[in-house]
Length: 87
Image (tube, rainbow, N blue to C red):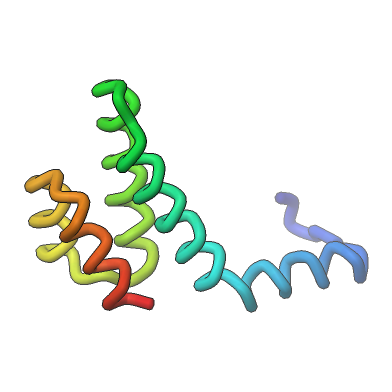
């Protein structure tokens, strides 16, 4: 982005709506990660999904010690319970 960045009214609307609905987007992303983890059979993919879950939970404002505990335990039920508490 340049110093004199100009956004069209349409682009401004897109950016504004993104930030208005950011919590819903994070919730949807975490819900998809939980369902993908439940169905995942590949260990490599599961590892990548757990990393994504950690990042998304921290971005959602979850307490870091709690997130680290859930991610370290690799317990899908605890992850779903934390998600339910957040939203």
